[in-house]
Image (cartoon, rainbow, N blue to C red; front, side, top):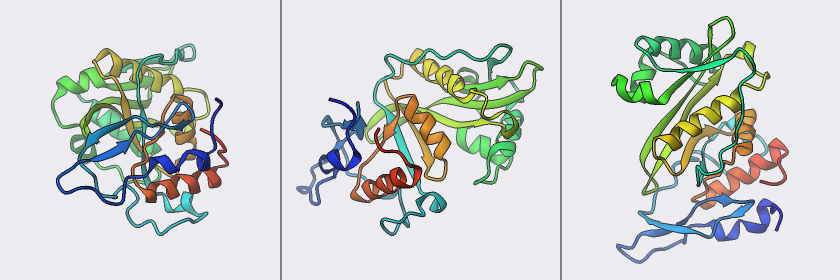
Length: 242
């Protein structure tokens, strides 16, 4: 069976309206292999917070910039993507919190990057950072990108690797660098023992979401509200099939 249109498979994705007292909800694991996954896991029913403030179907979903999540349900069969000649990836070293902040400040157009952001997102222990935070260098040695192979020990009740804070500085975008950087991070997650990966993004980041789609990520849909959010995004972004 080929990829399905969103409308053809969305009905099986919804969380039941009611649950027996004290019973966990059966939550579907989003879209898998072009259709909504029928596999479910027992986790506590979560509140619908991902699209907080969303008011229904609107074509301005890109401007509203609603927070969403995506998942890759297996880290098997990762894509083999090589960096262009001269570009290299290295891992965090002492002082790279400032390097990270510089790259993010040059790249991020929707959020304000302050010196406190790195410590808030990653802590201050250099051990995990040295194993998990990647930096992309240009042929001249300048750092022009970063992404982290981070972790979420309780993503809807399961441990997930987390692709976190992917950035390529504006003047180096459009050169095919983000995909191989992402591939390095996904491979590192697998090497660290993670079986699956998640990430957070927002609906205004159309190029990023399309990149994640190409790397096997699918929408993480848990509520009826999120069905509407992703359907509107598909229409606004011109995406017909997953």
